[in-house]
Length: 106
Ligand SMILES: [Zn+2]
Image (cartoon, rainbow, N blue to C red; front, side, top):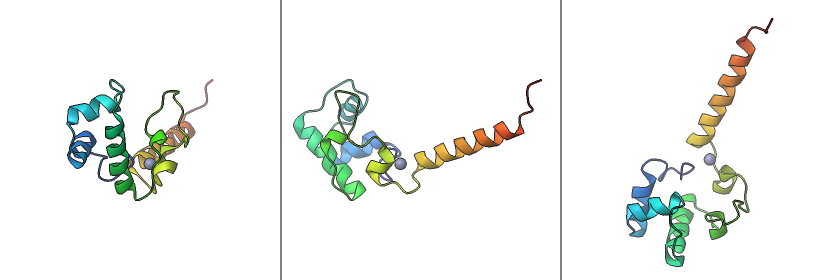
């Protein structure tokens, strides 16, 4: 959800409102504490498809093996500068800058 505009902030509540579900149920599903029903899975996929503007295979949302068909969430979502990507790029830049400023060990 961090890769979308609508669900990046307060995502559980907004997603629950959009699909007519209980926010606590969505939170339990997202945290892996509960498996979603087929109906809930379809509703989640439909809401995310609408937000992303592209078809979304439900196998991209739920895994039992720990692997997803598309390994990169940004690639899956078609991100072009999402907050997550920008944060990762800033962190990498800071690490690089910090590494360049360090004095060599003696
Ligand atoms: Zn992204």
